[in-house]
Length: 290
Image 1 (cartoon, rainbow, N blue to C red):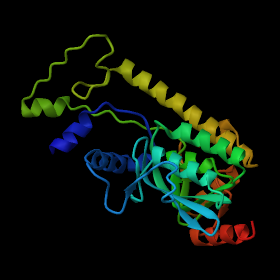
Image 2 (cartoon, helix red, strand yellow; image 1 turned 60 degrees about the vertical axis):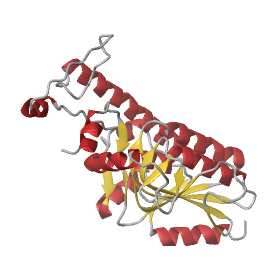
Image 3 (tube, one colour; image 1 turned 135 degrees about the vertical axis):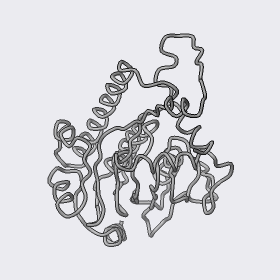
Image 4 (cartoon, helix red, strand yellow; image 1 turned 90 degrees about the horizontal axis):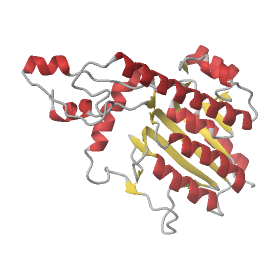
C-alpha cells in the first residue's frame, strides 16, 4: 500500500454525489488532484470576468461550457478533461450570462459526478441566473451525466442524451475505511487522543460504531431528499412534471441503454435521445437568427 493511498484512506469520509459503481474512480482522481502543484497540461487558471479571454468556447452566439470528469468544489483550472471545479463553472457561467454576444449557453456534459460541497449552490444559482438574464441553458450530454453532473444538467431548460449515454444516479454515497485489521497485521498501534465525545467519530483506525453509521446514513438520506427536491423543481420549471416521490423511488438507479433511456424519458429525467453533435448543430441553427 503506497503512502498516498494510505493518506487518502485515512482522510475523513465525506458524502459525495457520484455514480455508485465508479466510486473507486472518484477516489483515485481525487488523490491525483490533491497532489497537483500547478495547472495540469492543457488547462489554465480561471479569472472571473477577465475581458482578455473568454472562459468558454463561443460557437456563433452560443457559449459552450464543458463539464467533464470529477466535479470538485474548489478546482480553479479550466480545460482539463478529468476534473471540473464548481468555482470555475461559476465564473464561466457568470461571464457567459453577461456577454452581449452570447444568446444561449450549452452545458456540454460527460461526468460521473463529484462532491456535494458547492454543487447545489451552483445549481440553484444557474437556475435563477438563466431566468434573470433571459438566456436559455441547454444540457447536451457527450455521453453521461450522473449524480452531481445530473444535478447540473437539471438546471438546464432541456436535456439531450446520446443513445450510448446515461442519466440518473440521484443519490448519495460515502465510504468508511477500517484500517484496524491492516494496522494489526503490520504491528502498528494508533492511539487517538480526543477532546469531545464525537471528535474521532468515523476515524479510519477503528471499526465504525453502529451509532455513527446510523447517523451518517441519516445524513446521506437528507442529502438525497435535497437532491430529489432540486431535480423536481428544476425539471418542473422546464415544463416536465416529475415528483420528489418519483425521483426517490429510482433508488439512485442509473438509466442507460435503449430500455434505460426510454424509462428516463418517460420519467422526465431527459427530453430526448440524440447524438451530441446533432444536438449541438440544432442549437446553433436555432440560435443563428437570434
